[in-house]
Amino acid sequence: MPRSPCFCETPDRRLWRITAYRCNHSAFNGYKATPSDYSQLRCLRCGKFWRTKAAYVSGIALALGDEAYRLAENDGGPKADPKTRSGP
Image 1 (cartoon, rainbow, N blue to C red):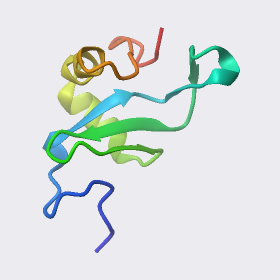
Image 2 (cartoon, rainbow, N blue to C red):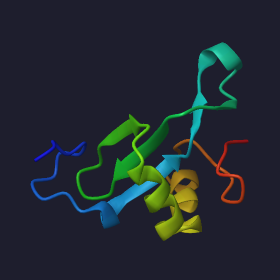
Image 3 (cartoon, helix red, strand yellow):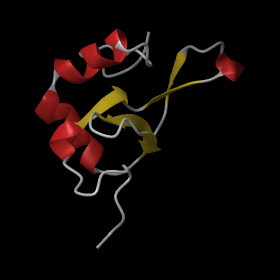
Image 4 (cartoon, rainbow, N blue to C red):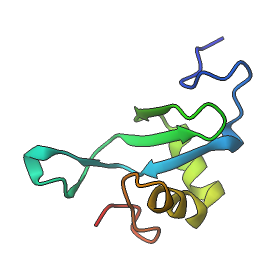
């Protein structure tokens, strides 16, 4: 069985939220969002953040819709536009 990216004993993808969908923020580009193959996710149960380019991310984005992007704005994480799935 593959290892889970979060610390939970029994991971539940329904508790994973996308905080940056296919974009990156770095000092090299002035912290502005730039396109990337990677997305950043967060587990609501254990609080762990991770970046991945796994195919399951697209399913989470579509299943959770705008809620994933509101979460990012509310907790100070990277912000993303729910229509374009990219940062500001």
